[in-house]
Every structure is written in structure tokens, then in C-alpha cells.
Length: 92
Image 1 (cartoon, helix red, strand yellow):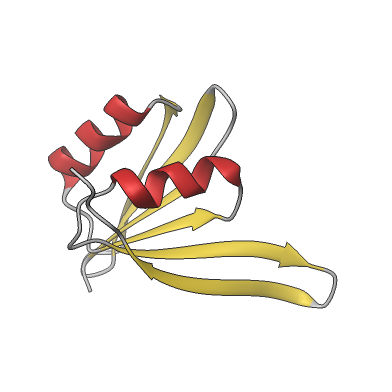
Image 2: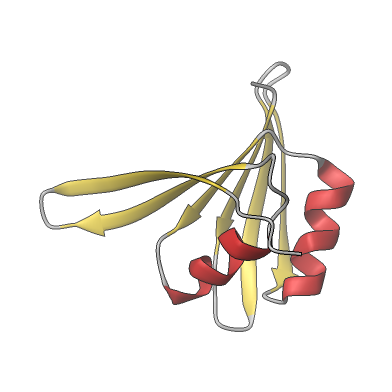
């Protein structure tokens, strides 16, 4: 696995980190929490894995992301972290 994109979703803005696990280089930026912008980020950076928090905003992401994309959804629980793996569903 080479490129991991982690996204902390916000209602209007999101914080994003791109990690190249081969070189350990990271890149951070804020982005608009907008479907079209998010799809442009996926197209430009070609991540192998996306890590995203579980919330209502994340549901829309997994239905609009390219099918080849693996998505890990993380949700904080009182006893630890709950992790779900999804294959993005391309409905276009």
C-alpha cells in the first residue's frame, strides 16, 4: 500500500492528510466538504486507501467514491475504536 488519504470530515470544511507509506512523506490541507471537490481530490491523488470517520457525511462519500477504492470507517466508542471496511460503491 502506498497512498493513504485520511479525512476528518466537517460540516463545511474537512482536514485531510495524504501519507505515502513508501517514503513516509505527508501532506496536510483543508478542503471544502463538497462532493465534487472530494471527487477531484480522489482523481488527482489516486489513494490506495481512504480512512474516514463514521458519520452521516461519510455515508455520502462511500456512495460517490470510485468503485476501486477501499474505505475504512472509524467510529469512537466508549471501549475503543470501531473499524468498518467498505468497498466504495460506484452508482454512476
